[in-house]
Length: 266
Image 1 (tube, rainbow, N blue to C red):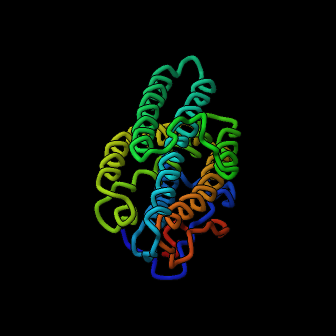
Image 2 (cartoon, rainbow, N blue to C red):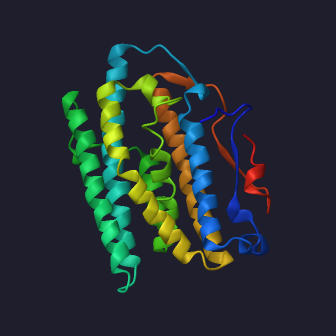
Image 3 (cartoon, rainbow, N blue to C red):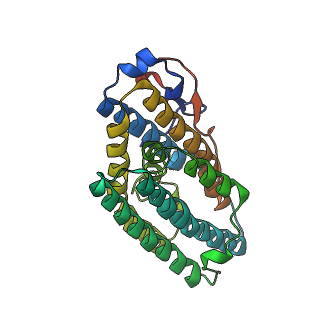
């Protein structure tokens, strides 16, 4: 991971591309564009070089850490199980293999919830999801994601956005979370992240399958952009709450019609 050497990462907004530019991409190329963009954003959000440490009272840190872990448990349930469940209902009867993969993801996400809930309980916090006062911003993120009208759009807003962002959280180098979380919690994250490649592959395969027309590509790009914008704000806020300050602007999307993804500013 290399830190941004300017004010912030500016990612191309593919949903603004015209039909001719989108039509130049075959399904594999389009999926690669979405993956690379989400990964660039993830690396920027979690790069340690984009933050400086701030002093935090130990009691305040413990309270915020407990809330962070509760939020992570909530997210594993809502984003991790309910969205794949909706995807299963949107897929056709002839797509049993993909439905089984989604069912396995749901099983994984339930386990992830339990991992975070256990850490909350260990810290003496209220671990039961029914008692988590989900912030309005999180509920809005969930509503935005679930409002997508196809399994492929949901994939772009879930497995091919959120899961890609989460996939960098266990990295050894230049990872801000390793400055903020203890070894026990990082070990829990490493355990969870081992499941993410299979979930990301679900997103990749659904995007490739349904990237048949410029209109379908544009809808998937827009779904990814909308969720990533909300996720950037949420994750940067959480990182700062745990005891650091971001010293570079957070990633943003720019409308640069038909440009090359390699022209993005780093």
